[in-house]
Image (cartoon, rainbow, N blue to C red; front, side):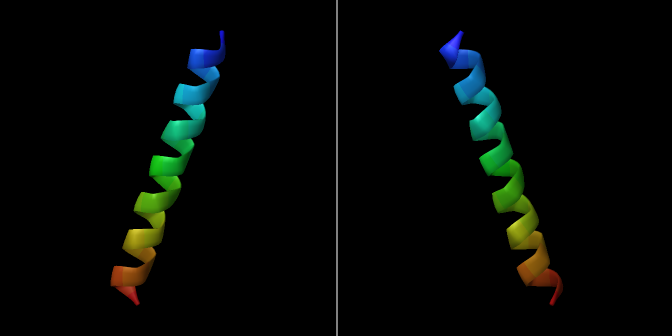
Length: 27
């Protein structure tokens, strides 16, 4: 099940990117 692992890693990337954007806009 490599697709599930890829999806979770992609989700983690999206979350990190969102947090980064929010962090930048709140500064």
